[in-house]
Structure formats: C-alpha cells, structure tokens
Amino acid sequence: MINLQFQYKHVISFLSEEEIQFMQEEVDLSHSLLVEKDGKGNEFLGWLDFPAKLDETILTDIEAAAKSFREKAEVLVVIGIGGSYLGSRAIIEALSSSFPAIYNDTKNPVVLYAGNHLSLDYHYELLQLLDKKDYNLVVISKSGNTIEPAIAFRLLKNHIEKKYGYEEACSRIIAVTDGSKGALKAMAEKHGYKTYVIPEDIGGRYSVLTPVGLLPIAIAGFDITQLVKGACEMRKVCLETSSLTDNPAACYAAIRNLLYRSGIQIEILVNYEPSLHYLTEWWKQLFGESEGKENEGLFPAGLDFTGDLHSMGQYIQQGQRMLFETVIHIQKSRHSLVVPHDEANMDGLNYIAGKSLREINAVAALGTTLAHVDGEVPNLDITLPALDERSIGELIYFFEFACSLSGYLSATNPFNQPGVEAYKNNMFALLGKPGFENETEAIRDRIAEE
Ligand code: PA5
Image (spheres, protein in one colour):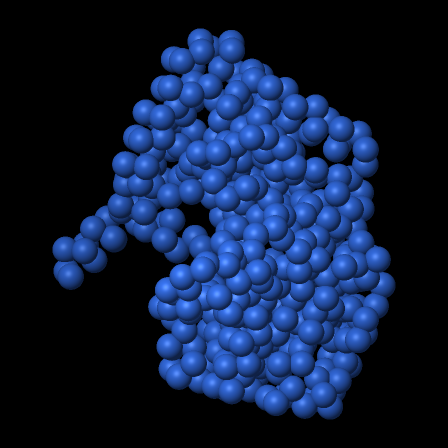
C-alpha cells in the first residue's frame, strides 16, 4: 500500500476533468512501452525492477560496510557529481536534523561532499578541515572518468594517504563504479578498495536506489531497508496499472504533459521544508536531463517556501503566465513546537498563540496555492505523511516512473543526455587533453577571433 497522495484539484480551473481523462489512451500506450521495455532508451531500464531485486544479502552487505565506516570516523566525504551525488544528498538532507554539522546527537558521521564542482576555495578549505577530522571516503562515478570527481578524488586520495598511511587509507575508501571499465574501477582494483557496482543498465539520474545512493545513506545512519520498501510499494502500483485514477505517477505525467501542450514552459517544484532543498535539486536533474532535448521540454525549477515567497513570490503571482507549481506537503513534523503566549503582545501575535508551527506552515501553503491559482498558476499537490525513509522511497520511485512516462508521452528518450558532452569537450580542448588536439586548435582559433 502506498501513502503518497497526488491531487490535482488546483488545476481543474485550467484543465477540465474530461481533458485529463482524455489522456488515458496515450498514457496506456506509453505505460506499456515502459513496462514492456519496448520504448526508446530501453537499455537503461534497470532502475524499474532494481528495488524489487535487491535481496537481503546486498542490503546486509551495504549495512555492514556502513556500520564499519560509521564506527571509524566522524566525517564521511562523498565524492561525485550529477546522478552520482544528488540523490544521496537529497535523501540524507531530507532525513537529517537541521544542523548536523553543529549539533549531532546521533553519533552518525557528518556527511560532506566533494567533486560536484571545481571551486578551488571549497576544496582547499575541505582539505584544511579534514586535517583536523577523522574521515572516510566514498567515491562514486559510473564512467569512472568524470573530471570533477576525478580531480577531487586525486586531492583527497593524496590527503588521506598522507594522513593515515597507504594501507589504512585504502581501508577508508569505498568506490562505487562500473563493474568492468573506467579509471576508477582500475584504481579500485589496483589499491584493493572495497567496491560496489553500478548496474550497466541504470543511468546516473535513476541510480539513487542502487549502491550509488544506498551506501552513503546507510553510512549516514538511515534505514535503507525501509527506503527500498517504500520504493517497492510505489513500484507495485506504478507497474500494475496505467489508470489515471489508480496510478499517481501516470496521472502526474499526464497532467504535466497537458500543461506543457497548453503553452506552459516552466514547472516549479515547491517545498515548505528546508531539508527538501536537495530533493528539488535531484528532481531538477531527473526531469531536466530526461526531457530537455530537441528544443522541447518543461524547464524544471525549484523554490523553497515560504522563504522564496519573499523573493520570487511577486513573479509567480504576476509575472509572465508560463508556469505551474508542484507542491510537496509533509503532514507530520519530527517535533512539536507552538507559538508561545506573550503577555505584552507587542508583536501582535497572540492571535496564533498556542498554534503549532506545522499548522501555520500548512495554512501558509494553502493560502499560497489559492493565491497562485487566482494568479493563473496551476498547482499540483503531492502529500507525504512524514519525512521518513519509507515515504521518501515512495516519492523517489514516483518521480522516476513519472519522469520516464512523461518522456515517452512527449516522444522523447528520457534515458540519454547527449547535450551534456558539449561543455566537457570544450573544456578538454581548452585544457589540452590528449586526443583533443584538433578541437584544441579549433577552439583557440575561435577564441582569438572573438
Ligand atoms: O545522469 C547522468 O548520467 C549524469 O548526471 C552523471 O551521473 C554525471 O555526469 C556523473 O557521471 P559519472 O557517474 O560517470 O561520474
């Protein structure tokens, strides 16, 4: 049984129920392409069944490795970029307390990240911090050759070997990479790092429920069995039926396609919990890389409310009418906190004294949705009972399935990312990477002409 609820009552003034139900036939076709594995990019559909295939043995092995890393060090550095990083960060931050680096009563390691950009100062300061902390490394790269994590790993490998000596350093490194190829695989073999394999048929942005995400999430102290269980429950529903009434991912995919076809260009994923910021970053990659090709696709954006209502709220209410919002609601908070009564009432807040902050946040969400709908911004609602492993597992699989189905509904291959290579090629040419000699000459000429 799934607990995630998807509602579209706040689009009904923009799309009629008939228009939505009219999508059923198209959805049936795309659903069958996906579950029968007959559609574009079907060589990358491993994620569809992976959570159901994860048996006790793999999970127990990951949990044992996680336990030994947890006991060994107060800091874990996760090296990776894009699909090899965003998913684990999204889930770890969603489940963590708000200030893990300053106040951590769980004895679980604080997770830091590297190799997800090329900032000199960030990496320098990270190395300085690691001089003073006990730490382990998880390095994740499917290709094993991506330049940002490769540079970070070279820096950190050098640091950890100097700090602990070669043998001990090797026992503090786990590599997650391809089963047979790539520089990282070769290094892991040479140095004897413990290794987990990223299945060949699962692309980066669909890989969070493989060791790519499960290992760092388990080291951070979270229950990966419940996470996978949530994903499996959602998988059952998603695979079983294409009915717009019974399959929430199918319904979400259908409505966002209808809105796109009606001329809307931007989808904003909205949350009311700061810990969901990176969930939005993960979602942006998932949908952006899956649908943004051949000059088509909704532009996926994200906002953290209510904070961003004080910066972007004006645009959403009255700017160009080209957006819709998908709002994530969380029904239960981890703690209780009410607005206290104040005798002097100088701030005039006694009218909400005794009210829970959760209730006030929910009222803010409702008030905002109603205002935005009045401002002609359709809203979709996704509700989870709580921010726990089980619910997040459901949410992750919900988005992955919806994204693939949505890609098929717009006749796109949602599993490739041909455009990502363009910047890399220019960068390699400019850096003079061996094998790029012709490109280097061409790009230098072009720059000289500019
Ligand atoms: O979704 C994707 O394929 C990308 O975001 C990759 O995950 C990202 O480029 C990192 O690649 P790799 O894991 O090969 O280092």
